[in-house]
Each structure stands twice: as C-alpha cells, then as structure tokens.
Length: 159
Ligand SMILES: Cc1cc2nc3c(=O)[nH]c(=O)nc-3n(C[C@H](O)[C@H](O)[C@H](O)COP(=O)(O)OP(=O)(O)OC[C@H]3O[C@@H](n4cnc5c(N)ncnc54)[C@H](O)[C@@H]3O)c2cc1C
Image (cartoon, rainbow, N blue to C red; front, side, top):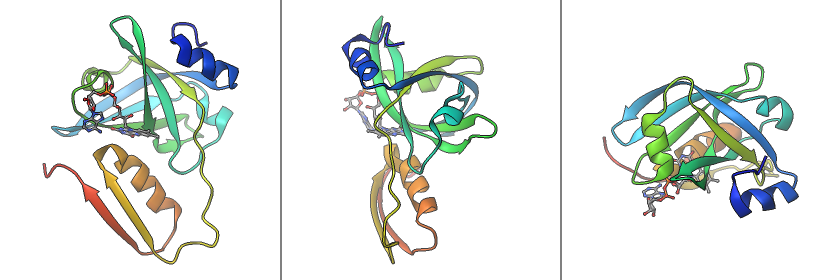
C-alpha cells in the first residue's frame, strides 16, 4: 500500500500499519448535518480484531493529493465484516465524500494508533465531553463501561 498516500502513507508503512479497502453498502442522512454510511470491511475486523472506540485512517482524494482523516467505527460486526461510519458534516473533503457516498463506492483505510484499555478499577461514574464528531466514540465508550452512571457534556446542533 502506501502507494499514492504520500509521506504519511510511507511513515505508516514503516510502522507496519495495515491497509484495507472498504466498500459502501448504503448511506442515509440522519439530520442535515449528520450522515451515516454503512460499509464492508475488506477483511479488516478479522485481521485486526475490534475494541471500543476503534478508529481508522481513511484516505480521500483531494484533487489528486492524499487527504487522511480519522473516523470511528460504529457497530462493528467481525462475523459479518461490516461496520458503520457517522460523519458530522461541515466544509471538508471527508465530509464531501460522505455527502456523495453511495453503494459500490470504495475508500482506502489504514489501521494504526487505535487502542483501548479497560479502566481498572471500573469507574463508578463516567464524565464525558463530546461534540458531533466524537459522538460515535462517545456511544462506543458508554457501551464499554457497562452500567456506570454517566454525565455527558455534549455540544451539537439541535436539528
Ligand atoms: C480518533 C478520531 C476519530 C474521529 N472520528 C470521527 C467520526 O467518527 N465522525 C466524524 O464526523 N469525525 C470524526 N473525527 C473528526 C474528523 O477526523 C475531522 O472532523 C476531520 O477534520 C474531517 O475531515 P474533512 O476533510 O471533512 O475536513 P478538513 O479538511 O479536515 O477541515 C475542513 C474545515 O472544516 C473544519 N472542521 C474540521 N472538523 C470539523 C468538525 N468536526 N466540525 C466543524 N468543523 C470542522 C476545519 O477546521 C476546516 O476549517 C475523528 C477524529 C479523530 C482524531
């Protein structure tokens, strides 16, 4: 891989990052500013395993130049080899890709740097601060900490 991914891709290759190609199977607008895209994983989940708040580096085309941005997996299903991505939409290459995403579209991905350690001891109460871009990570985190009560400060649009 790394071919076509510039110096960032070259560094990630040296770090033994793994590369995959995802394929869009569907997409829907949750609100005017939030879009959910469903994908098949190109064998990623079987190769990497899965953990709470897992994120991937996606490679978008920016007028012929590589544009790498991070996105968090939503409802990853290793058995089916599928997951979702939820895009907080704004001005941007990744946002534009999500706006136009349709079944059959593909996007290249690199997995490196993601990780999660279960808190020990388990928290008796969770305090979290999030915005629309971190909503997928917040949801995943809350799912991972079990029944602990949570207080969330969330900044986002009302629509
Ligand atoms: C580990 C990790 C996981 C992430 N997971 C998700 C995810 O699941 N969903 C998600 O939507 N985002 C997620 N993000 C954030 C996402 O990577 C950035 O918002 C990214 O910059 C979007 O790329 P772009 O090409 O659309 O815009 P860019 O080209 O990076 O930026 C274009 C313009 O938009 C502005 N901008 C960038 N991000 C935002 C924003 N969130 N809100 C408003 N303006 C913005 C920039 O300041 C700039 O002016 C994650 C980031 C990290 C580090």
